[in-house]
Amino acid sequence: MTQQNHAPDSEGTGTGLDRRSFLKTGLGGALFLGTVSVTAGLSGCASAPAGRITAEGTRMDASYNFRFLTRDDIQLFQALLPAIVGPGLPEQPEARRQAIAGTIERIDSGIHQFGPANQAELRRLFDLLNFGLTRVTVARVWSSWPNVTTSEADAFLERWRTSSIGLFNKGYIALTKISNVAFYGYEDFWHLSGYPGPPQYAVDALPQFHNA
Image (cartoon, rainbow, N blue to C red; front, top):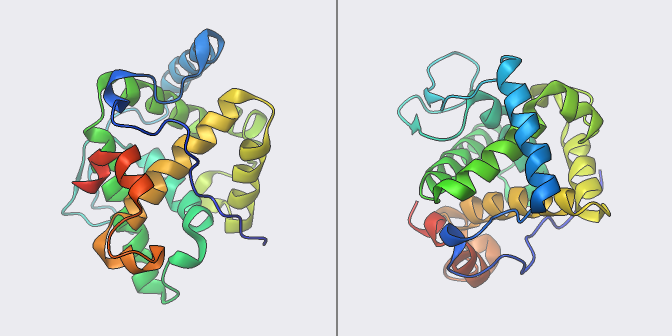
C-alpha cells in the first residue's frame, strides 16, 4: 500500500462553520445526497445514534454514549482511520484499537457540537457511504466497511481526493478533516504533529474538536 498524506487542505477553514455549509455541495449535490439519505433510511440503514455500545466485537468503550454517529458510521471510521492517520496509529494491537476507538468518540463529540445544517450534510455524506448501492457505484468500495482493507480504504480516499467531481472532493476533505482533528487534537498524539499542541490549522478549522 502506498500511504497518502490525507491531511485536510485550507478550504473551509475559519470560525464560521456553524453558520455556513460544511460540504458546500450546491443544489445538485444537495438533492443527490438528500435522495440517497432517504433511500438509505427506507432500506433499513441505521439512522439513530449508536448510544452506548455493549455488543461483543464492536471494539468500542461501552461507557461512551454516541449522540450522532450510528453503528454504521462507526464501522465506516474504523475502516477509514488506518488509511487517514496511517503511521500515526500505534502498532501494538490493543493500543491501536484504543486509539481508533477514542478518535471515533471524539469525532462523534465534535460533530455533536456542530450546527444543524452541518450535521445534516454530514449525515447525508455518511449515508451515501454506508448505503450498499452507493458505496459500490459512487465510492467504488465493493466490500462492506468491516471487511474493507486499509489499502482499499486508501484507494477510495485517493479516488475522491483526485476526482473531477466536486462533491467527491468535498466529501474527501470532510472525512479527512474531522478525522485528523479528532486524532491529532488529542493530547496523547500531539507529539506526532511536531508541536506542543494540536496543529493550528486544525484548531482554527474545527474548534469544536479542540474541546471535545
